[in-house]
Image (tube, rainbow, N blue to C red):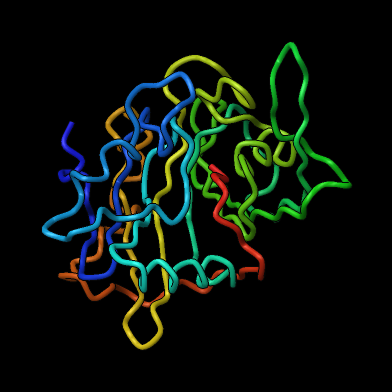
Length: 249
């Protein structure tokens, strides 16, 4: 697998990688392949390798922003911290939500045990976490759902799907329904850039999504055809200040 083949946006200050499912961003404690170990593949002539500005879980695919130099890194850090970066995820959940759309407002905290390790759970005393969602399609008792995180807590979408929506994500071995690859994809990323047009890109669904990708068809917006100066105007999605760079998916 050549990471250069997964770049879906690049200019002098940033790139967006369509991260493959199964590739962790940080090197696991047990060792093995990771994006961190392969950043040199993404220099494209620059002296420094790029820096990932946020994280996606190992089994989540899709849009991942990287800064190509320190000034860009500082700018994007500020964009994340101000809550102005907008993300859209697609997931298949095991069940059919009664409503067509809604807002999950469920604070999250970390729970640890010697037997099961750690995981995130709904916790009234935890950090605020909010996710907008809408149901896109239903097939065989399963639903394709669009999630738009308004905060960026660790594992936010996966926990909100299970505890907030009431339906875990297919393939999620921790919070959802084990078996097969996890059907969670960082579909769209919109990043403001001051006086420049925003980065606005969409990562295509991976092949392992099979019939769900076919079901969406042309409803999935195409990747921006820009040569590096951003794309369409940012969608009007409410965001909240204080969004962090955790791996909410």
